[in-house]
Amino acid sequence: MKTSQKRRIIISKMFINVIFPVFVVVFISYIFSRFRKVSVSTLSSIAIYLLTPALIIRSFDIHGEIILKDIHLFLVHLGIYAVAMYVISLVISKVFRMSKKTKYAFILLSLVPNTGNIGIPVCEYYLGSEGGSIATFILVITSIMTQTYGVYLASRGVSIGKDNFDEIKTALKNVFSLPLVYVVILSITLNLFSIKLPTFLRDPIYSLGFAAIPMGLVQLGIVLGEVKFSRIPLVFIVLTILVKLIIAPLISGLIGFFIGFSSVALKVLMLQYGMPSALYCSILATHFNLRPKLVGITILIVTTVSILTLTGMIYVLSFL
Image (cartoon, rainbow, N blue to C red; front, top):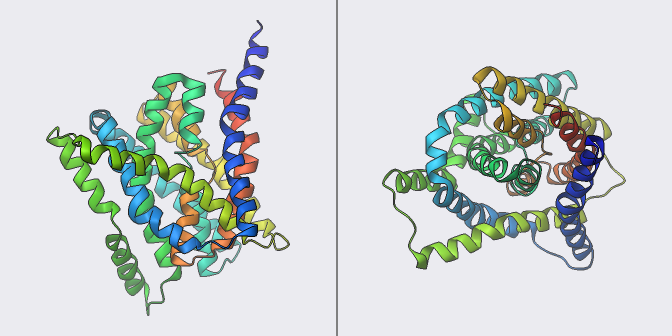
């Protein structure tokens, strides 16, 4: 079989087995929301206070040794990446004179990748179990960023302080009022002392963790059910696509290359940070009332366009 034919088979299977099922769940939830009123804020609270913390605990419990072994390199990469993407998105938001809420929604969408429900299966299918393990590890550290720095950005976007210091203080208060910081500390502590969850705790926590990803898709579909599609902010969406799907993976790849990543790890870094904006952006936007409908419709369109960009990226990476 020719190499070009193999690549076409890989790409078609990726779409059928990975991306298409994601859209099926979102579409079913969207249809459901058109006939049944559902409280999105309640779903957001469940995700923030129950499901996502359980997902993090489960990830540390399963992959704790790998995470603690290489976490310093990936954290350096994430730190540089976050600063670079913040500066890029901030400059763009100022050039286009976005309002405060829109600016922070744009920065949030630009920074937070969908490393879980799309990233992990794509990496595992394309790069095998090694790629899937690295992708899961990246999910953990990006989740830490999402629920600390992401919460900070979402909170600051809606804060009404007298000055920057008041806004930062309010945002930090919101970060520490949510459970993830404490969940991460607990998970790291358990791993340092090689403590595994007992069965009577592991089973329910794992169940909640597994529910986090499909619940995020369900919530996105429900949020989109409330969106008025006649008011699509075209410029905002095009800018998000440009930053999130094109600039972000290039920045991630360059940083990874100079830090010393290569082969499978480098490919996973580019794929994971080139994923569309995370569904968790919708959860945070709803929880803090940070332009939730704008964020929802942007995630839908960016995720749709990512079918093309991810396909192209996999094609290019197949030559490396």
